[in-house]
Length: 267
Image (cartoon, rainbow, N blue to C red; front, side, top):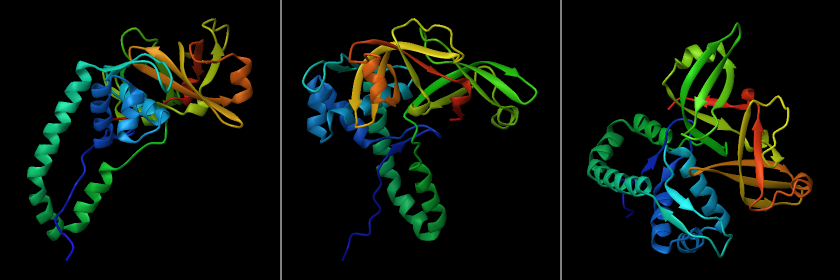
């Protein structure tokens, strides 16, 4: 007879943001054990790129970086888990313990009201395909006749982001100064400029950083910039453009994107 005992996997997620599950926590623990992303990737069975992307997602999602890494490719560079990273590991462990104690009660609820229980489980699995997701604070809301301009603060030391959304959306979400939100920018919306000389362009969002990773395909290249303070931004551009701009690892580049390309989600 099969085991009918309810089992669960803990997943932490805010609406519109990537999930944090046991796989990400195992990666953090492995980074602490090995002192590098490459070593941690081998332990948990991920490619170096997948592990690097996971670290970037985690650092972008939280107010403080969880991992401090020195880019060095698949065989070099070091990485350390920060105090914020260890705090997340500890909190996740405590939540897993509490979840274990609650399983019997959930099992009873599933037997008496299965539809409601299943809907709850599905809500925990919601994900977003947007690569660039940042936790921000609204610093200013400028109302217009049709649209509203929303000024956002990423973290200290970063250029603020600006989003333009409909006034109806602003009202529906109750956006006001001090509100905590998530800013989402598709990688295909991000343009790159070599160096930090941004010139005169209409894109109001400009973030300068260092190329931390480059993944080339037959047609496109995926470029990840290290913005400092544990933050990154990923752009998808043509391989020809990446080569002509000299966007190799270590090069300085500026990410540009329109305010209308910033999606705002409420936690």
